Every structure is written in structure tokens, then in C-alpha cells.
Length: 143
Image (cartoon, rainbow, N blue to C red; front, side, top):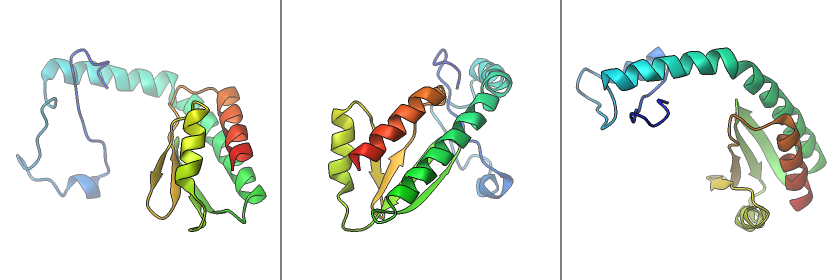
């Protein structure tokens, strides 16, 4: 958030989530430093001005391509869900997603698995539409 100089950590959530915390009930090694907070506020402004529009377009591309892949593989994939650039592909329980994850890793794509036989895909926010198209095409071929 602060470009790692100085280090910064923060939690962003809606009011319902944040109301769980009382003063002094949550702490962080890298939270609250005034310089890091000022830098982080500026970083968020840059992300808002320069990145969010592109991220929305890439999210739409990703969603369209993953849904198309889902339609082509509905016998293997139960569900595609995601928001922003955080996606999960839930496979049938008999599908070996760990084997798929390792194949993708061999191809240079880092993914992880989650409960309910779900492959988690979390590309960087800076990924191009061209690259996301290549990745999803490779994923579709690998399935």
C-alpha cells in the first residue's frame, strides 16, 4: 500500500465488518505510522485515478472468458465466481484440481486451491487483457 517504503498494513472493509472492532482490540506491526499513512493515502488516490478503470475492463474480460470456459466444461466445472480480480473455479468433487494446479505451475501460472475443490485465480491488478486471454486459453486447454 505504501510501496514498502515505509512498510504499511491496513484493513479495508464496510461498516458492518469494521464495527466488530473496539478501540485497542486490533493492532498491527505496520499500522498507524503517520508517514506510512500519508503515503498510503496518496497511493490509493493514484490507484483510484489511474488503475480502477482498467481493472474494471480487465474484470469484465476475465468474467466473460471464464464464463465461456465454464460453458465449454460444464461437465467438469460446477461454478465460476469472482469479484474484481479474485476468481474461483469450483470443479466436480472427482476432478483432481491439485494435478491441474501443478500442470499450471509447470506452465508458469501460479494458482492455489481452496475448499470445495476450487481453483483460485488471482492475477495481478496490472495484468493486460491480452495476457488474461492467454492465461484463460491455456487454462481451458489444460482442463
